[in-house]
Amino acid sequence: MADQDPLPIDASKFQRAADSPSPDDVPTPGLCGNQPNGGPYVPSKPETAATSTRAVIDMDRRWKNGTRLQVVFLTGDDAWGQAIRQAVRRIAVQWSDYANITFDFDQPAAHITVNLVPGSIPQLGWSVNWGSYNCFMGTDCLNMRKQFPSLPSMNLVFPPNLQNDPNLMDAEFSRVILHEFGHALGLIHEHQRPDRPIDWTPDVFSYYGAPPNNWSQQMVQEQIINAVQGGTLMGGAFDINSIMMYQYPQGLAAYKDGTPFVSPNNVILTPLDKVVVAMAYPVEGAPASNEQTLVPGEAARPGKIDVAGRVGRYKFQPQTEGVYTIATTGMPALVALLGKRDDPAGRMLAAEGANAKLTFRPKNVGQDYFVQVRHARPTKGTGDFQIAVTQVS
Image 1 (cartoon, rainbow, N blue to C red):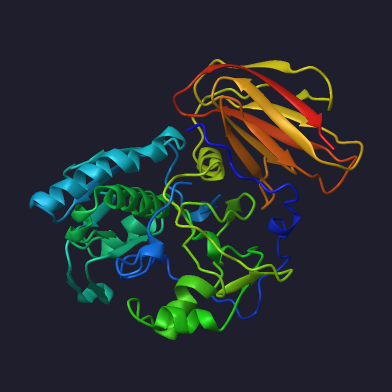
Image 2: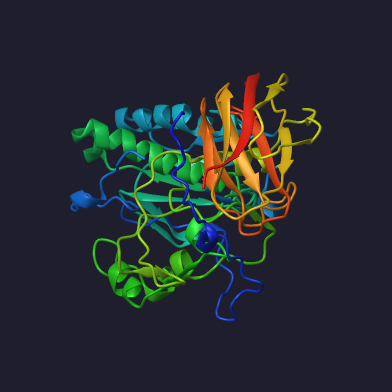
């Protein structure tokens, strides 16, 4: 997609990484709740409907790079179930444009099993209703099935009344399927990353404790408030537009500096969602380009991705304070900016497009910054591009 990532000029408040977790934070289960009554979308609340529009992965729950993940539908043989199955086959594979992972559907054996209908699953303590969406994290999908071979590792129980609004149905399919298969690849909730720059208010308990969610305080703690711990996490800057972020209205949280926190209803992958999974599941055997030095203000330098999965690597050093842009032209590209070479460390930004432009204010002048350029479909695409760094103010 050619949409530009709406990066803030001064991203410093999104880049504060906690040196150590709060003693109040406790580990969360390896399971996405994604709201038992339909996730961020609530049919009775029009304001939660999808609108057009970055990610953290638990490296300890990654599949082996290059795995062909076999997905089996346990239920959903009726017409509505077949429609959901077709949507899953069409949408989940978007992740394979960026991650070196393949999804195979309807195989005899399975890494991931999917339920599409309401019901009770007492072995897991689940009461699955219309609008129940959840998934175990990464390899936990298979670990759960070793204990309960016939049970689902993912629930995609879309309510049939979505068919009354085809546009909303398509948006919900995209939002939920991308989100849950993100979990299946090992991605955590964006709002539960340890370095999140937000604090929750007590109103979050009453908001999710009320209908239609009716969550207990424990559920709110586990699915929203508690930061994920225990795994080796890799991710970019905090991203309210990530497919892994819930939608939150104003009043439930605020940034550390007091700025109100609001997140939209995200239905597509962002550039950072894509870059993070491309780094976690790189194309095997794709040679990296030799790192080249860019000088702000100099003419654009030519680059080439001649092998699918190859990464163009650059570094530059801003010498004066101000606002800079990194711009590419030519092939559709994913452009990532890192404060440390090959290490997102909560400080990676990204932009995307045939004319990708990433605007930022460096926190430290006289320090090296690192740029990675991928084709916009890293596992498949090749092409030529031009890249330049410019100080704009």
